[in-house]
Length: 402
Image (cartoon, rainbow, N blue to C red; front, side, top):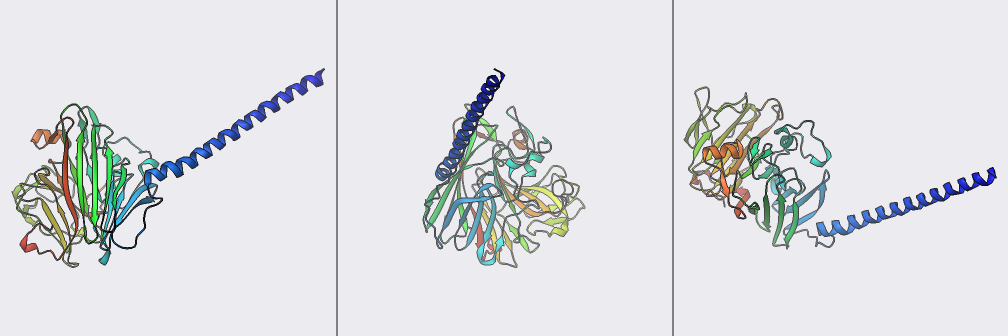
């Protein structure tokens, strides 16, 4: 009797175990099949690269790449190669002029970091953006500037669209022209931004068409900032800066203990007062040995462009923008200064950043000084920008590079 009883128990356990194993095998198979289906079908649809024509001449574009786990787009022709991190705000992380192997974009010492692989060690409203700042060029919406509250939402420095993935869609792929559209949505505000970038076969510059849409059912103020940081092996003390007729404003107070500009200065381009009583010519780019970190702003520009030229290389970086929208150009002068987090005196760059408002206190500050830009409910605003390499630029003529 006991033998039969225990035999039944053992048989029952064997049946249960067998059933669980079968279930486990079945579940494992389903998960495996799902991963295969997802990786090869959905990813194929998303990236649309399985049957893309490969070329070795003309303009080429590919979104089939990943860098440190982040989807990356490569756009190039015989003159330039541009890297755009689609999975991180569609940042332009690299812009290289091929004939001289010249990199125009500033790169932080820590480089590109994947926001999805790291948990911030603190919730500080400034450090989260800076921790993942790789340099290069970011489009900042709706809150360019220091942390503050935005219509009831807590915003860190420079908003929230630069650390999130954007969609990417190749629009045109021919040897004559390639065009790609990036699209992202703010997490804490009802704004969507699209960034359409085109490159032609013979050009050394990008044509960028950007649109910002307010999906709210109320009007909202913004500070739209094109956070362009020039550096790489292009920037040196041999560089000079050219702008159209404009006015210079310096930040109301020191931005760092290494700041040299006299706070709250206002005057005509190009001379600026320093704290020590001397003057500085903004046409000249200091070397890293200057050990300074300052903020200045250009306004009342009679045209929307600037050029920075390396006189040793005889090549320039130029940018054209609509001055009716971007009424200011922020000038972030990080010339070996900036002690302590995050720069620790290691960085050398010139940020020349078209913006709708000033200074860098965000929307709240812009509303106080009257420079906030209002976007009506359901409406879209747009900007066309050209940016890239300029050859044989003559500074004395002071002309639009494009």
